Image (cartoon, rainbow, N blue to C red; front, side, top):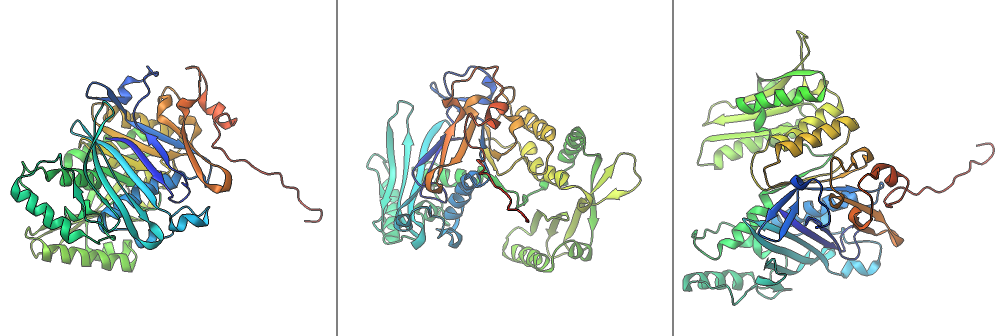
Length: 452
């Protein structure tokens, strides 16, 4: 689970801002929205971020996207102009990115600094954090110096030699993260202290799932498993979309080519061929979604791949409906359904504009289902929204609600609703729209000229 994030000099975040998932000890309501870790720490399961257009809400989501992209391949090209451009000095100033997390009952802080305009990593660190407020360094690096493992980490002589070799080879490397390098084709014994590099890396890459309005999910295996499909049918009928049944239908490759743009179709075929050629296991499956369709491609050996899509039934209609026939809101629901179905422990969903194309009541119903289905799991949901109607203490705790607003010179500040002393019967959405908490649009007066 995430305990805190910190970001500085990234997009609209000039000075350092933090968002914590540690619950307030003053709030006694909705205790099922917390997860107890150890004897002292309770982590929140939700964070809802409000703000006006262009306030910086999506930039907070981009923090996670950038973090994961850098883990995959160093500072991405699209990130070189993502320093905070409200000040010319920021182009050469370090940007900072840190995620604090809980894994298997232990707390860690992993982060890095970089000069984005130069695609240069200037620092990297990993600490283990303790509930008494102290911390132990596991490793760190500064600029082009080789990474240094803390003396408190006791390795065998073989492990010491391996780490020294990896660290020596990495000296002067300011393009990549050492954490990524320690996971590039390397294997460690289960008892090795070097396993910590894999533990942190895998959590960051696999446990944080980012969903944005312009990118559908790319893994829809639930729609192709009988048990999950039955649950999907039960869930979809609760949303009053008119859909009464979802089923799978096999199609041929020509039908798929008509559903997708030519270049995307060709890229998919190339990816399937490459995966089959490079894999020792001849079985391969890939799912995806475009604006027009869901599709699943399954290959066994060198035979023709099996291609399937979903068909939808409305009420008692004798006709099937394609995915492209549905409204934007219904298609959005299918994007989000994965969040309800995933049963794996310790997942953090980061969603930009969760309510996009959804009726407020439908958004509320989705959030209630999410909380109910993940009540016993260590699952977190962090999302941005404009939907004031869900700012309700019946749905969320005060310490789960955050605001982002633009301040002088265009930079963003982030703060929690919990800083405001409100009664428990306060209508929060009304107070928000009245401007009590800030983070709403501020309009200037405009007067039409005569004759215009």
